[in-house]
Length: 241
Image (spheres, rainbow, N blue to C red):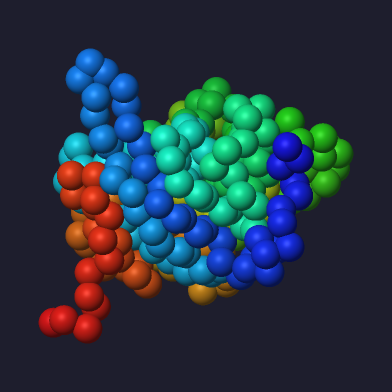
């Protein structure tokens, strides 16, 4: 299957970046474990959504499915107009590289390389010419407020600075969807607020952001909240005080 070709109906709903229908995940045993019960939800272009839940609730499983790091047991997942649930491993990897950006709690930076070099890594395997790669890296570094640190080693940055580098490395690829896994989990209150403000700004500029978190203070900054518990995904009624 060509991972860049969707049906006409899929292309018609491109303003919905994430559309999930009956998506579920069962890990075969023994014992057999249903990590995610069949769920249905959508995330529109430019939305900022938080998915919350306690440890072991299924957040990581759902993140893995949305990020194409794993395949569902059943159900349909349309990402940016493309039905991806049944792609091969190779096609899934290709779509993941082009359309999804990740921001992890642990940053995943190369400490002995500079900020600029780490951000450029986001395009290194995309065939982007070096000059364009450098220009785009400088633009997103400026966007996250680290121009003055662009030549500093990542090993010498604060936690908040490292997370901003991770966000810039994601932005350089212009993904359709940014997935953030506990993005403030390793940060103090001040740096957490800086990162959340950055995500809010990106959302205001049209970026589609989904944050996985157990922190209600983080979830409160999102435009919309989903709750997962014991593998069951629900959307709390925002009209209820």
